[in-house]
Structures are given as C-alpha cells and as structure tokens.
Image 1 (cartoon, rainbow, N blue to C red):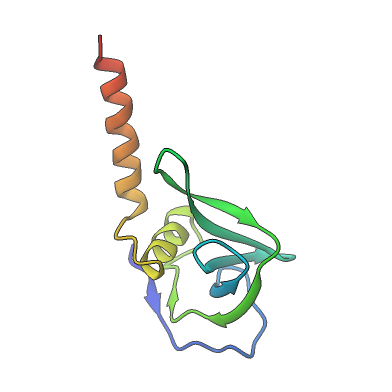
Image 2 (spheres, helix red, strand yellow):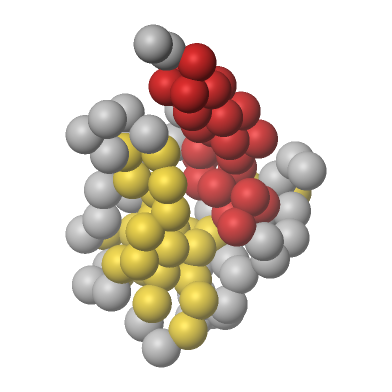
Length: 107
C-alpha cells in the first residue's frame, strides 16, 4: 500500500493514526497513537529498521504524507517515505527471510 498525501494542518491536535513532523525524536517524524504515545522508525545497530515507541515528542506539523491505513506496514512505509529511506516493510521482511535462510543453509 502506498501512503496517501494531504494538505498539512498544524493547528489541530494530533489524532490517532496521523503522521506528524516531530521535535525530540530520531528521524523527526512519528505516527500518533494515543495519550502522548508515538511510533517512530528506528535503525538497529545491525542496520535493520523497525517501529519503536516514543513518548517525549513535540508535534510541530501534520505531514503531507499519511499512512495508507492503520497497520504496522502502512506506518512503516509512510515513515520510511518521509525520511527518504527508499525502503518498504515488504522489502525489510524479505531481507529478514533471506538472512534466515542463509543462516539455515550455512554449514
């Protein structure tokens, strides 16, 4: 699914499922969930990307790019797009599967 585009509105408070430009978090963007909880995209030391919770973020502006839906993959794809990472959740899953197969097939 591809993220949708809309016009940003910085004056309204965050609503669950919205992607915002944030201060105080790595990557500068997050998807709001509820009660001050956000999901942000982080990179592990191994180079893998995943969503992680964040609680001390300051919303600055609603992003013109919004997740296509409420699912993990939709949020991941929208966050990767606004951070110009050129990856998708589907590609990350395929990469994990290929790594696992290499480990299983190695002597």
